[in-house]
Amino acid sequence: MYPSSRHRGWLGLAAAVLTAILVAGCGKGDGAGSRQQLPPVKVIAFDEAAATLEGIANGTVVGTVVQHPFRYGYRSIETLHALQEGKTDVIPESTFINIPARVVLADDSRPEFAGAEVVPVAAFREEVESLLADGGAPPATTGPEYAFITNGVADFWTIGKAGAEKAAADLGVNVTVIMPASITDQTRKIEDVLTRGTAGIAISPINPANQGEVLAKAAAATNLITHDSDAPDSPRRVYIGMDNYEAGMLCGKLVRDALPEGGKVMVFIGRLDQDNSQRRRQGCIDGILGRDPDPARRDDPGAELASDDGKYLILGTMTDQFDRAKAKANAEDALLRHPDVAAMVGLFEYNPPLILEALERAGRLAGPAAK
Picture (cartoon, helix red, strand yellow):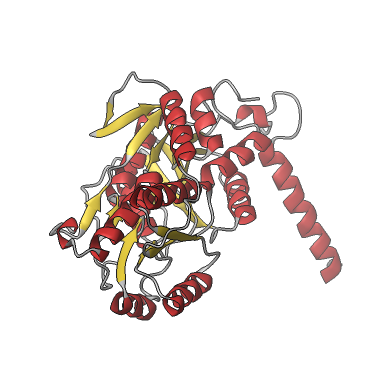
């Protein structure tokens, strides 16, 4: 007699639970399914979340590639104000103001990493604290007002806000910092700023391909520049940030150094609509696989990608659309479906801390903090 559909459902659920228990190794002892048998997972990070920096200090994170959000904020307001005063020579011929990425490691044993500056984690923490202390809303002035618009809400942007406000205070101008929750919210905020009037907008576009109309409208009404993430096909005056492809290559190099014998890798990122996330992810993949650089390459996020020598296998790229609960669930799901994963790469600021939480729960943390 065949089981009813209801019974089949319960049997399926029971099988799934049993599989999860076996993979997670919740049982005690030294059996083949015990979680003590599973090796720790290497974590490679991006940006400077507090948990990431603490992970580098205690050995649970290999290292992180960092931008300079304070300088993004400061340089954006500085550039907008120069344009407002007619100083067009602040725009280089390339229309790209490069603020190079750096690498944060546990100590200063490697002053340079793949051509990038290395900052010891202790010194970097002191730097961030000092920059935040320099921030704070400047007093209102009669000078021009500028808008500094981010692509979301994150600690990263708290540092960027401090930079924008410091520039406003130094220059005697006003700045409104806007942190939208979504592409719809960001587009609406641009429209609102234009309605109220502004001397300039610095924006990190969430989806430049779908925001072409509003970006063109902004550029026609005022000085428009991009920061952090570019909109290269828009009429913006200049892009202030780093080369995200090259920064992604640094992440890939960190993975290869952490796994000299090779292994399976999962990549995590907020979303792939932004220009910076597309380039960052691709650079990371190409760095892991040891490919010749090609910033125009775009691999399918769901594809498994292997290096030519077969040592490295990228299992895929998991996105979360800035949903923190989804980001943590992605890390937990990756551990469940790929218990032999050797490294996890978090390419948005909040990804690495949530990866660490998932690894701690699964008993897969590396370093002295491992349980």
